[in-house]
Amino acid sequence: MIELTHVNKRFKSKVVLDDINLKIADGKITAIVGPNGAGKSTIIGLISGYFRPTSGDIDHGTVSVMPDADNLYAEMTGKAFLKYMCKIKKADYKDAVHIADVLEISNDLNKKISTYSFGMKKKISFVQAYVGDFDTYIFDEPTSGVDVPSAKVMLGLVMQLAKQGKGVLLTSHNMTELETNSDYLYILRNGKIDQSGTMQDLEADSLAQNHYVFTTDDAANLVTFLTQVPQVEIVSKTDGQVVIALSDELPISDLIMKILEQHLSLTGFWQDHQHLADIAFSDK
Ligand SMILES: Nc1ncnc2c1ncn2[C@@H]1O[C@H](COP(=O)(O)OP(=O)(O)OP(=O)(O)O)[C@@H](O)[C@H]1O
Image 1 (cartoon, protein in one colour):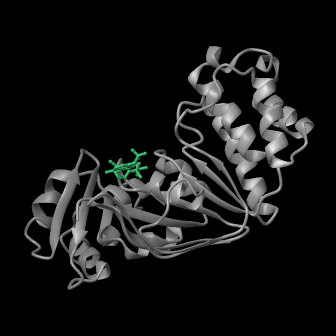
Image 2 (image 1 turned 30 degrees about the horizontal axis):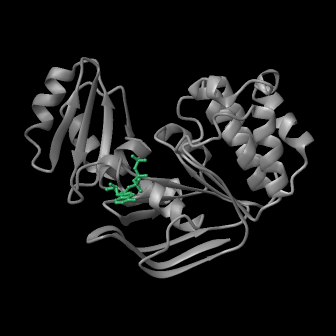
Image 3 (image 1 turned 135 degrees about the vertical axis):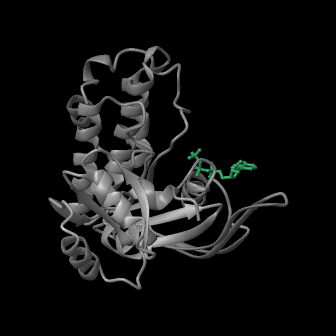
């Protein structure tokens, strides 16, 4: 497990992380989500010992990191690089070759890393992070620039680590990927943790919990009626669908009764599902 308690980080006078409390539990995939510059890579830099916190505590066991930045040893061949990393990490080179094979780069290991494509560099960086026996594994945007089938393979491997009881920290700009694969998420804004929880917790906390989708054969008349209800705000409308925000003062069942009393067309309704992107990147 890794635990950050009241961690602050300043670069000169600039506050980059402000009172971060965060846990990466064993056997779980923990995600950090946030816009560019929110502080995700700085948190990873602190955990991996690349930076020191300005104040606060960081408690951790052994950690293996796949960094976001591309700072591999360009003049080495893939094979030499992996042999070197396996030596440092006391890992079996055969395991590295196996993972390289699964990611379809085992035929490229005799080539210099400088000749690799961006996606191939990501893959070999993933392989070096994956091998060896560590308490926690950190993958900073592992799938960015990687083709969809290989990204799926990577995420499958990441899930296997968590199943083996390892702690995993994952970042990505692909919200669907995090929504599907993370057990616990931290949403970072301007260096502060703004929200945290399971995807269900985040959905429940979200303001747009009050959004409802109505399907109808007659959107025009339904919208005319809904605009007269003071507790309703129209969020969007198309030919067959109207999305509303409903204030807490009017229960949805009462609104449905009103619509039916008016003999308006209503073919279906459901509560709008909040996506992680809406929650993490909404204006507050
Ligand atoms: N070595 C440094 N010196 C000064 N400022 C830095 C340094 N490293 C990062 N920063 C600043 O810290 C803030 C957080 O950067 P960080 O790279 O952690 O963000 P991020 O959430 O990982 O962004 P991205 O999604 O773009 O990768 C940014 O404003 C950045 O300019």
